[in-house]
Image (tube, rainbow, N blue to C red; front, side, top):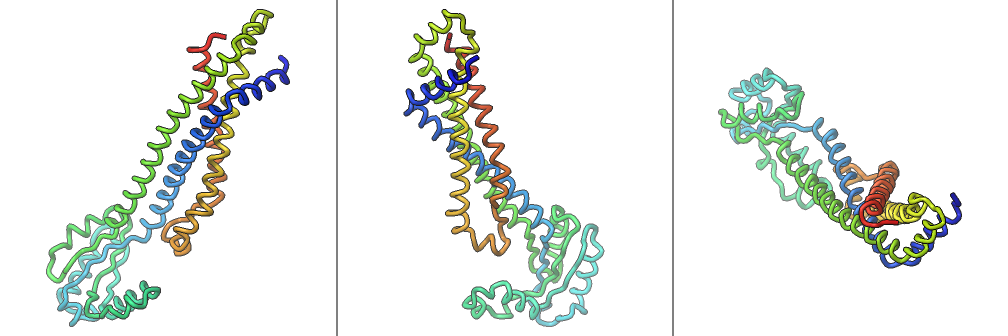
Length: 300
């Protein structure tokens, strides 16, 4: 097999159908970019769950009379509530936070917003028990056992807020993967059409090659390589899009959240690890689509 001849045929094919080749590359790049976004969001949600679940607490807020009259939680019903919490199965720690300590924590949390801190008053902050569980997924036990008890104003489960955040991120992931599938289908159609058009425009040369003894595999190989080359270029373009998105969109829009460790940062290393997957997917899809097209629709 003459390698130089095969590659000259590949270059000729790509040049001859340049507009379809560009469309195929762009469609492949967009579908792989969306696939990459979906995989990065999956990784981000996983890291957030690991980070946040270990810090989640259930806040058992106490009524106003306890907040005013029992700063050390030595009277009833506050002391009784503390004993019940400490003896509940699955509870790791129980910290009593009176109104003054709660107000200090509020000012520390919102120290970057001094206007809000000035408007707040200690009377608006209830005393509370901050309960940490061995398994954050079992916070329902505390909510069900202590909601409505004497001295309890409200039970605030931080896991519910986190579930809403994860629900939003999972929605972003699902939308990106669904769009990636749609774009991948369009890319498959373009690859198939490009191969058929390329084969039709070179049917005379291929016919002559077959007459002089060339095998079917030898005549089909250039078309397969054309599809794979276009797929690899699309994959490289998608990786470039991910890098540009990270540098000029994510870092600018979410930079403060990254710095405050509220959302784990998407690093270049993650994109680097993702790159071989995207290139491999592009090669597999292009080669498989090309092979099926040549077997089913093109007789060379």
